[in-house]
Image (cartoon, rainbow, N blue to C red; front, side, top):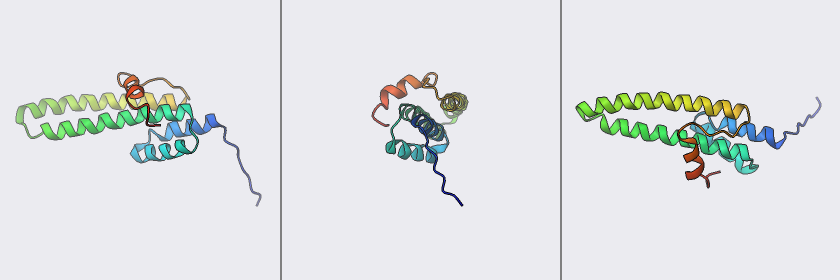
Length: 122
């Protein structure tokens, strides 16, 4: 059996980190660790984008939970949260496709804020 080593270019490595960052929060942690070993522009960019998606999703969950105890307002907020979750899922798909294509395009609505607010993350 012959030892084979493959050289992965930084672009490939950054693209892998970018893709993995969108695969659950554990995937984000793995991507963050991999990116710290070999920082790439695309990896850092998508780590920030996907983290903003996770933060927004978590915040929606907290808002939905807290207002769930209020009879009328809770139902209205719950409906609004469902719509927001669908939007976040669409944003996740857009970000994932951008990562697969190796593009540094911001996610709609929250992408520019992610780069601004989370610039020190990756």
